[in-house]
Length: 116
Image 1 (cartoon, rainbow, N blue to C red):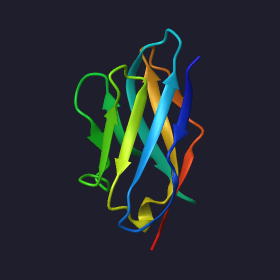
Image 2: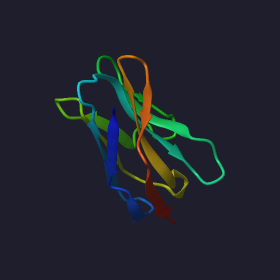
Image 3: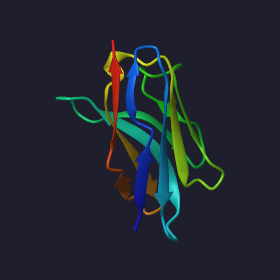
Image 4: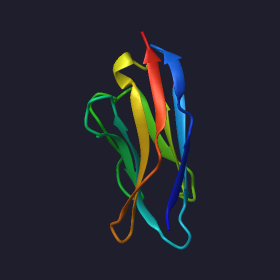
C-alpha cells in the first residue's frame, strides 16, 4: 500500500515562494514516477510537474522557469520549489506517484493560496 504525505502549502503574496514536499511510504513497492498536480476552484485537475525515475522532468508551460521539481536519492520524497508565484497558481496541490505496476496513487492535497 502506497501512502503519500504532503506538506508545505500555505498563503503567500504574489511574487513569493513556497516549497512543497511529498513523502511516500511504499513498503516494497517501487515507484517509476513522482510528481505534482493541482486543481483550482471550478477547474479540472492539471499536471504541474512530473519526474520519472529515469529521464527528463516534465512541466506545465504555465510553470516553466518558475517551478522546479526535485527528489531525494531514495526516490521516496519529491519536492516542488515554487518561485515567482502568481494568483493563478492558487489551488489544491496533489502529490502523484505511479508504481512499477502502473497504478496511480494520490496524496490528500495541500492548499496553496497566492494573494495579489
